[in-house]
Amino acid sequence: MHDEDAIKMVGSYIDKIADLPWPHNATKDEYFRFFDNLPRPQKAIWSTWILQLEVDNGGFEQFFYNLWDDLLLSYCMEGLAEISAHKILYLLRKAINLVEDCRTELDSTTKYEDWLNILKCHGVENKLYQLDNKFYQCKKEYYELRKRYIRDNIESFAMLEGDSSQTP
Figure 1: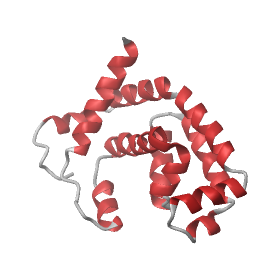
Figure 2: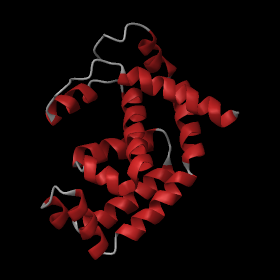
Figure 3: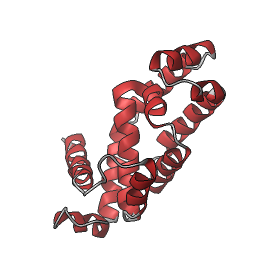
Figure 4: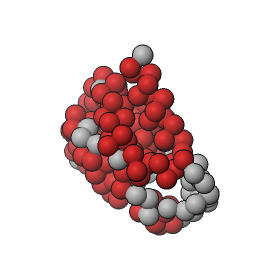
């Protein structure tokens, strides 16, 4: 029951952040400009959600393939530190170090299959799978940390209760 409460509470605020008027068909710069204008607590919750969303759907491989961007990585690391998700931050840093070793090759392709083959050739794929499994084992704690963080910063989330058309 306790887990469900954390999931519901965190999920409801993630939904409210998602309902903000994010720029559609925006450039990366426009997206990050909008993101930068969110209050710091909302940025922490949103960036940690993006990480979870990608890892849950396809592991760290998918996270890096879909979102390989130094700025987003720094937002995720800041968000994890902000909510005190030290175990997840450690896993993300390990994953970054693994993928960084073959970054030049990865940056040269846009095909997911090629990307996976590069990771395989460098012996990174299985190591990322191991990190995925450790990530999944931390999910209960991850939700609890975000729940506590939201409660500790409720004033930044209370503003989401009103008009969702307001821009941050």
